[in-house]
Image (cartoon, rainbow, N blue to C red; front, side, top):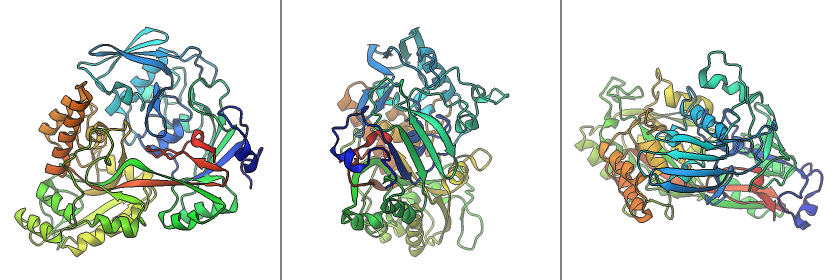
Length: 535
C-alpha cells in the first residue's frame, strides 16, 4: 500500500505508538471538500473539521464531545456574568509569532462582524464582551449568567491578528476567503500547518513542531483526498490508494464488515437530518396550487407542517434508504444528550391523520411543491429527498425534487432570493456544535435576528416569541437540571407545537481503515488526523 509510507501498517500496529513518537504519512479519502479555509466563512462540519486542525480554539471537544483545554489551560467564573480564561504559556502561531489575548479578541471581532459567507458563528459570539486583563488572561462578560460559555468557546477558531489579506475594501478586516484558501492568511496555532489546497483534488497538512496542547499529532504529513463518489471512495481504500475513508456508504457496510482487509468504526452522531419550511412569506416561490396557479403559502400553517410530517414514513426511509444505518428522529438530538425532551416521540406514518389536518387547514385537495437539497453533503441526501418526494406525491402533494452540489445549495438556501432564503422546503442537517439542545434551538428555531446572533441558520424563519423567551431563560440558568428542563420545554414548543422543522433521522456514521488502524468515531462527525490510532 502507498500509505503509512514510512512505517507500514504492520509496524504501526505493533508499535507502542504515542501521539508524538510516530513518524508517518497518511492519506485519507473524504467525501466533502470544505467550501473555504476561512475559519468564519461557513459554520459547516467539513469546514470546521478541516480548518480546526490548523486553527485552535480556546477549548475543544474530544471524540465524545467532552470539553478539554486547547489554547486555554483553565477557565472559571469570576462572578455571575464574567468568565476568566487563562491561556497556555508559550503558544505560537505557525509563522513563529506569539499567540496572546489580543489574537483571541481579534478573532472574535472578525467572526462576529463577518460579512458574506453561508452560515455565521454569531450564534456563539453575540452577547459576549471580551476584555483583555493581560496577554494570557481574558475575561468574557455577558449581561446575564451564561453557563454554556465553555461550550460556546469550542466553536470559534483563533487566527493571528497579524495575518494579512488582499481585500482593499477592508471587509472582514481586509482578509478575504481566497487569502485563506491559498495560504496567504492561513496562520493558525493548531497541530497541523496548511501546505496546499488543490480544489477538487486534495488538501495537504503538515505537523507543526511548535504545537502546544492536548491534540495528538500521529502523522508528519496528512493528505485529504476529495473523493465524492461513494463507490470510488470504497474502491480507493480497497486498492490501497488511500489508508482510510470517511462516510462509508450505507449499502457497503455489511460487505465491508466481512472483508479481512478492512476495519470499520461506527458511532451515532449529534446530527439530525430535517426539513426546513418557508414560514415567512405569503408568496412562497416553490409552492403552487396543483394547476400551477399562485396560492397563499400553506406552509405558514402549523397544521400543514404537521400534516407533511405525518406523510413521512421514517422507519421505511431508515430501513430502505439508509440500510438501517440511522435512527428515526422526533426532535433535535437523540436520547442521552443534554436538554432533550422526554415528551416527543418519532412521528408515526399517518396518511389519514395528514389528510384530516390538511382539510382543517383549508387544503383538502393539497397543493404542489418543489423541494430542494444537496446531493453531496449528508449520507444518502439525494435518495432521502426522492423518497420524501414520493411520499408527499402519494399523499396528495405532487412534489418535484431538485438537488445540487452543496456549495451552490447552501448559498441559494441561505441568501439566494435577494439576501433571503430562496427555497420553500429544504433538506438540511444540523450537528449540535455545543453537544446539547441549545445549539439547534438557537440556530434553527429561534427568531432570526442577526444583531442578537439568533436564528443564524433558520432558513425557514420559524418564529415563536414564547419559545425565544424560554430559550433565553435556559441560557441564563446555571442549575443544570433546571436548564435541561427549560431546553426540553423550548423543544416541545418548537417541534411539538409549532412543527418549526420536521426531524427525519439521526445519522450514524461509519469510517473505514486498512487493517492495523482504526478511527475513534466522533459524535461531531469530524474526520481528524488525530483520531486515527493503531487497532
